[in-house]
Length: 54
Image 1 (tube, rainbow, N blue to C red):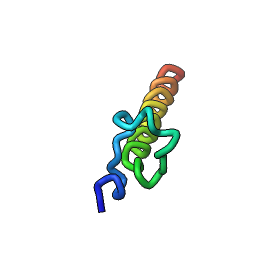
Image 2 (cartoon, one colour):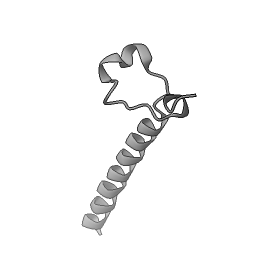
Image 3 (cartoon, one colour):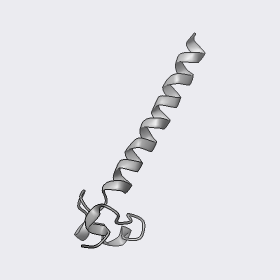
Protein backbone atom coordinates (compact mmCIF):
# COMPACT_ATOMS: atom_id res chain seq x y z
CA UNK A 1 0.00 0.00 0.00
CA UNK A 2 1.52 3.30 -1.08
CA UNK A 3 1.13 6.71 0.51
CA UNK A 4 -0.98 7.82 -2.46
CA UNK A 5 -3.51 5.14 -1.57
CA UNK A 6 -3.78 6.75 1.88
CA UNK A 7 -4.66 10.21 0.54
CA UNK A 8 -1.16 11.62 0.27
CA UNK A 9 -0.95 12.20 -3.49
CA UNK A 10 0.36 15.60 -4.54
CA UNK A 11 -1.98 17.62 -6.75
CA UNK A 12 0.71 19.99 -8.04
CA UNK A 13 3.10 17.19 -8.95
CA UNK A 14 0.39 15.33 -10.86
CA UNK A 15 -1.30 18.42 -12.32
CA UNK A 16 -0.88 17.46 -15.99
CA UNK A 17 -2.20 13.94 -15.38
CA UNK A 18 -5.22 14.80 -13.23
CA UNK A 19 -7.72 14.26 -16.03
CA UNK A 20 -6.73 10.56 -15.93
CA UNK A 21 -5.71 9.96 -12.32
CA UNK A 22 -7.90 12.19 -10.14
CA UNK A 23 -9.79 10.54 -7.34
CA UNK A 24 -10.84 12.06 -4.05
CA UNK A 25 -9.35 9.09 -2.21
CA UNK A 26 -5.86 9.73 -3.67
CA UNK A 27 -5.77 13.51 -3.14
CA UNK A 28 -7.92 13.72 0.00
CA UNK A 29 -5.48 15.77 2.09
CA UNK A 30 -4.75 18.31 -0.68
CA UNK A 31 -8.45 18.78 -1.44
CA UNK A 32 -9.39 19.15 2.23
CA UNK A 33 -6.55 21.61 2.81
CA UNK A 34 -7.68 23.67 -0.17
CA UNK A 35 -11.27 23.75 1.07
CA UNK A 36 -10.24 24.63 4.63
CA UNK A 37 -7.98 27.43 3.38
CA UNK A 38 -10.83 28.94 1.34
CA UNK A 39 -13.18 28.67 4.31
CA UNK A 40 -10.67 30.51 6.51
CA UNK A 41 -10.29 33.25 3.91
CA UNK A 42 -14.08 33.57 3.56
CA UNK A 43 -14.47 33.71 7.35
CA UNK A 44 -11.85 36.45 7.62
CA UNK A 45 -13.50 38.49 4.86
CA UNK A 46 -16.90 38.07 6.51
CA UNK A 47 -15.49 39.04 9.90
CA UNK A 48 -13.82 42.19 8.60
CA UNK A 49 -16.91 43.10 6.60
CA UNK A 50 -18.99 42.69 9.78
CA UNK A 51 -16.49 44.77 11.75
CA UNK A 52 -16.63 47.56 9.16
CA UNK A 53 -20.42 47.70 9.46
CA UNK A 54 -20.35 47.68 13.27
